[in-house]
Image 1 (cartoon, rainbow, N blue to C red):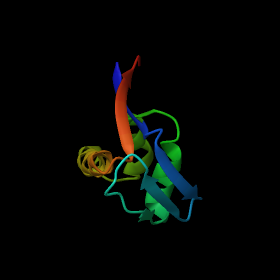
Image 2 (cartoon, one colour; image 1 turned 30 degrees about the vertical axis):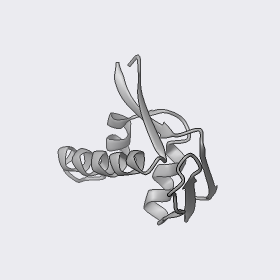
Image 3 (tube, rainbow, N blue to C red; image 1 turned 90 degrees about the vertical axis):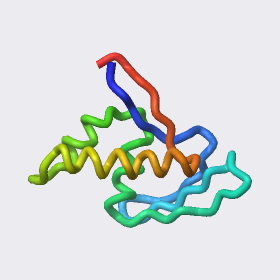
Image 4 (cartoon, rainbow, N blue to C red; image 1 turned 90 degrees about the horizontal axis):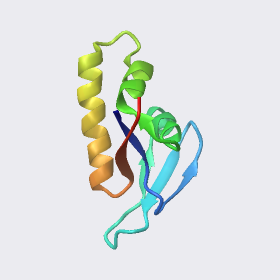
Length: 92
């Protein structure tokens, strides 16, 4: 089984590959969060549950995969703490 990441169902968002703005509707203290182009492409990818390993493969682009995974995991966890993402598991 692999760990997957995806949008929470209670998140409103609008945007495209250049810019996304998202809001966690389930949080009273939520504020809109705007993503730059790179983060927007990641956000669009997470419209379906996606394994972390797949994201690392797509984003590594010549960088050390371990470093990419560490930074990406921190970013995803921040979005989860902000009520924007959730993670689960799926059979590999």
